[in-house]
Length: 182
Ligand SMILES: Cc1cc2nc3c(=O)[nH]c(=O)nc-3n(C[C@H](O)[C@H](O)[C@H](O)COP(=O)(O)O)c2cc1C
Image (tube, rainbow, N blue to C red; front, side, top):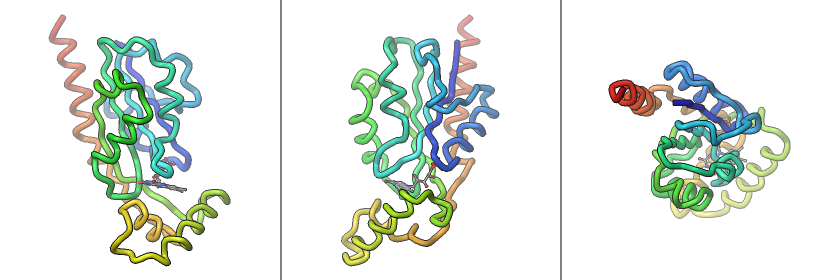
């Protein structure tokens, strides 16, 4: 069984989660940009950060996946908003092919952000959104938009490695099941 952890990360949060997960499961973690051939792995764990409702690198990575029979696939999203699972599922569904989506185990983790260390483009986007959204009634804003208001000129850290425990258990138990089968 060949296994891989792939991450899509801009400022390091998903990379940190991926590396931690790798240490606990004994699986190598690579940046999606450096992945050579996704088809040689039986277990694929994708950890990707959410940017404007998109999941960094997910489309590009899963576009190359052909034969999915007998594969275990996990997608772990990382974001700052307390988003519900249905929203994330809908997002993933619109990005990857249906036959892959039907097999996927989805998890969501909380990320972190430091407005002051964002690159120019991201800082501009957040401040522009802030200007537009702060004119609206906060109670009527969607959760994702309320999140924009909180990160403007702020630092937020909601990372929690304990949230990876169910994922680690699932991956490690799958390993045991395979070993017992021999
Ligand atoms: C421009 C921008 C847009 C973002 N959009 C979202 C979003 O739509 N939903 C969300 O939950 N988090 C959003 N975030 C927060 C990031 O997902 C969060 O900071 C994450 O931890 C970043 O991961 P990384 O360090 O691996 O790049 C956004 C952050 C930036 C800078």
